[in-house]
Length: 351
Ligand SMILES: Nc1ncnc2c1ncn2[C@@H]1O[C@H](COP(=O)(O)OP(=O)(O)O)[C@@H](O)[C@H]1O
Ligand SMILES: [Mg+2]
Image (cartoon, rainbow, N blue to C red; front, top):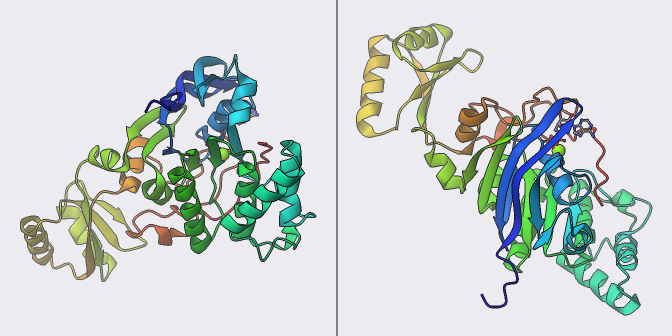
């Protein structure tokens, strides 16, 4: 560790920010170790982008302190900017330029010099699987290619800390997985990644540590497993053949929650043999016809729901709220919205 110049890539204490009388951040504390992935997880409008914009020096906090890459955010903003890369929720890619030209432009802006700029451009095109598309204008790229180019552009300056604001929102599952691989490789190479996401699945798959924010406060932090342990056991999801079965069962299971449309009942329980037998006996007793039944161990979705009372992807009054989307990312199907695919209309100019 002798060569480690600073232990944490990002620290923040008591960060606050209001817009008018709207308190967006109400005292946020963060600590992100170097070369790790940190996920800031929260529903729409919870202040994720605001946090990124503060930490990347694009806007100033009203209160609190923070360091990024060992530099004080207020006193050493230029040094912070020199150490970071930011990829906003919306692409900074110029559609009229080719992929290669976009990267070269970034290299020029960073004053890398001709030879070094070419070298980095070629290297990034290869690493991001964009060699074949290098000479095509970015306007012709797919969503996934655009995101990769955008991230590649962020990396031209060789940042040690990168901020990725909803890096996979709107991407199809395959492009999302490609992006995850790229992020993992970056971290293996020593980069610290601060990402925001509405996807529990994404935080679960990528993040070493997660902070859940809601209403301007961090409501939980920890690894995905630690967060999952914070909420009581799982549940059994029972789907009935008809509404009469659902009605009958709902009356006998205290603490259960029903979904009339899906004809399902969610019964708290650990899914152990004994409790399953008891459950089936009671279902038999009320003569409810069960279509199928699945045991659900707690996942981040449950944590999120328990902490924020908001299913992921549900708009929470933000003008940029996205409609809840494709529920298939949520294997339980119990709550839709873990896979919102609509891009929001907010414009991000984070670069
Ligand atoms: N420049 C601004 N002026 C006024 N309100 C803003 C501004 N930026 C963000 N907000 C509000 O702050 C809240 C948090 O926004 P944001 O940080 O973009 O949330 P998230 O990225 O989690 O969706 C939202 O209610 C949003 O409308
Ligand atoms: Mg945002």
